[in-house]
Length: 291
Image (cartoon, rainbow, N blue to C red; front, side, top):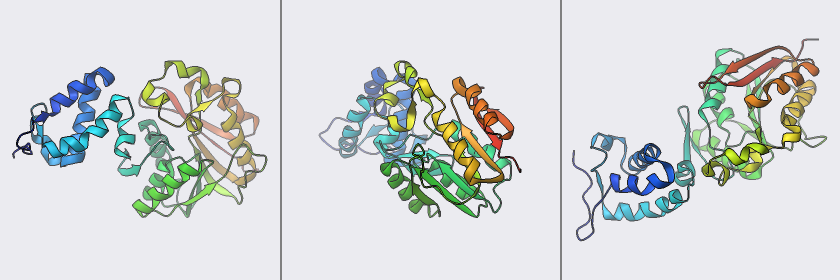
């Protein structure tokens, strides 16, 4: 298998050239991973068998790559540069209106599917963002209904487009959970949420590729009320979750004990905690009592 030929008269640029360019911004290992993904995105995975470093780009493709590299030079996340991200086995559109899906959130989905609670149940994903949780659960579960809710019109536009691209039937709802009456109606069997949970005080330690590009609306909560969204969701669950209904959260390990107190204060039972792949207590579930 031969590499794509360079255009006559233009100096060939190799993957290694691009790695060297990005290394000061991303570090060598991450720069290599980025350039591998760019190579695959432009030419397909079959060409990955070619030795990575010496593989050259045709000049016309290198020219198309240049504006993407300029964005990467500014530490913009690759997923935004390419306009897509993977969540498990589904490809999602992403842009600056939504968070980039994380592997820890995939673990939350896996946990929910393990429990077999999805059969013929109505599911609501609160703070849905790109729709990654709702869409993954719709694809893999046997739900009677799946809905995703968010306050951001931009996020819901992305989620709706993702649902259409994947031919997955999810209802998308616009609502502000912090309003006295956010407009949630009906009764649900299962709720799941990955709400804003990064403390404002954590900003100083965050990488610029997250802090400068991902939506703060979906990321941050004030330290003075760090469990604001969890408390509100659990309060609404007391009205709109069926007796015996279950709520799942992804959460910040730093505030786990405070979230657990809200479960207890509001009468939820059988509260369970799960660790993520890094050994951090990242997920929690609890049931609305039957009586």
